[in-house]
Length: 286
Image (cartoon, rainbow, N blue to C red; front, side):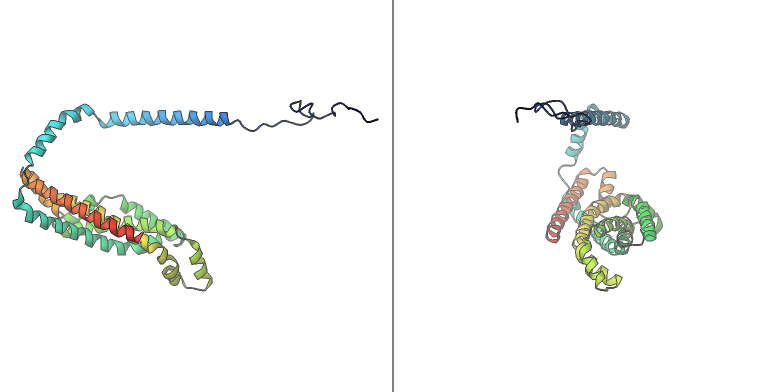
C-alpha cells in the first residue's frame, strides 16, 4: 500500500534541511567580502598618495605663505608694465613673424623626417631587430628638451633663427615619430590582410592599406606639434635662437617693462591665433 513515506536517505530534510551526506556545500563568495577588500585597498591607496604628496610639498619647499607674501611684488611688477609701449610694436610683430617661421619650417621638416622613423618603430610593421633599435634611438633623443637642443645649435652655428629651426627639427622629429608609430600600431588589420592576400608588395601594402588609415591622424599630430612649437620657439629667443623671445628678454634686461608688456601681448595674441586656426583644421581632419 502506498502511503506517506519519510524523507529519503541522503536527501535534504525540507527546503533548508541538511545537505546530502558525502557532498560539500560550496557557497559563492560573499559580495560584502569583495566590497570590504575594495574599501581596504582604496583606503591604503589614499593613505600612500597623501604620504607621497606631503613629502613632495616638504621636499620642494612649497609654502602658500611665501606665495601670499609675494603677491604685492607681482602686482607691483604688473603695475610697472602698464601702459604698454606701442613704439616697440613693429619690432614685436617682426619677432612674432620670425617665431612663426621657425615653428613652421621646423615642424614641416620634422613631419617628413619622422615618417620613416615612425614606420621603423611600429611593432606591427618593422622587423623585430629594427623595431627595438628605432625605439631606443627615439627614446634617447626625445629625452632632450628643445631648449637644450637650442643651446647646442647656438654654440655650433651661432645666433639667429637658424639654430632655433634646428632645435625644433631635432626634438619634433622624435616626438612625431613616436606618435606616428602608435597610430600605425592601432590600424585595422583587415584592409592590410586583404591587400596582402591579393599579392601586393610591401610598398603597396603601406600605400593602400596603412596610409589611408593613418594619414588623418598624422596631419592632426603635425598640427598639434605646430601649436606646441610656437610656444617653444617663443622661449628659444632667450638663449639666442631668434624670435620674439629675444626681444622679450632684451627689454626685461633693460628694465623696460612697458616695452616687455607690448612684446608679451603680441606673443599671447600670436599663440591664441595659431591655436584657433589649428583647432579648426584638426576638427575637419579627425
